[in-house]
Image 1 (tube, rainbow, N blue to C red):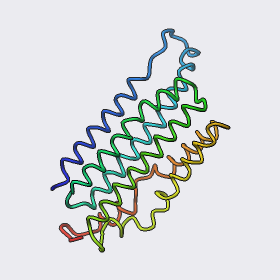
Image 2 (cartoon, helix red, strand yellow; image 1 turned 45 degrees about the vertical axis):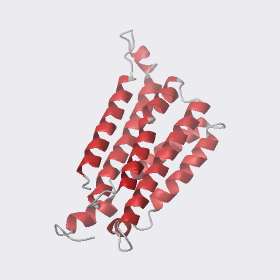
Image 3 (cartoon, rainbow, N blue to C red; image 1 turned 180 degrees about the vertical axis):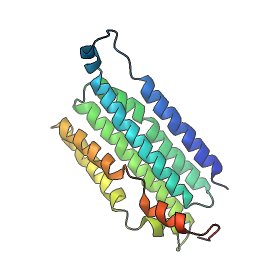
Image 4 (cartoon, rainbow, N blue to C red; image 1 turned 90 degrees about the horizontal axis):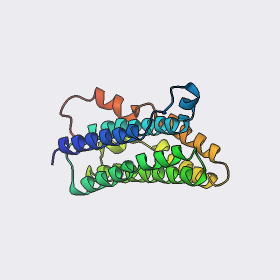
Length: 198
């Protein structure tokens, strides 16, 4: 099975997710800067989530550049990833509307953790489908960022019940780790001649 449909479907779902998030932002009823500042928490939550969705879109795009065919297991793993990503708007809205208090901050971290786990599952299924000489495995390497991100999320979830501000800082830190597209895949693939086998 070709990869065009799974990429197009994923792109569409991620576009809808971003649209839902921005629709949750509400303009203040008063035309004053002070009323605008009252909307700062939901806006900041939106910015962070927009960055995360952008990171997933970028890395999903780069990962699928190393895919030549799609299996049924990969389709379901991709749907699993999209399911957790589709919960980002809900978690974002809850966290922003409640001004970053403990429970919503922990729930936001849980959704991010599950997104990371789902992405890892999809990546591993692609590698397994490509066999012992997997091109994606070679390009990803040891994947330190992918291995440490869930640990950071787990720490942030626990800290949310003690110091939500530290949890938020950890979410920002992980986003900063990933904000640059995955050069491990992008660079080498650009140098491969067209049609090179896996």
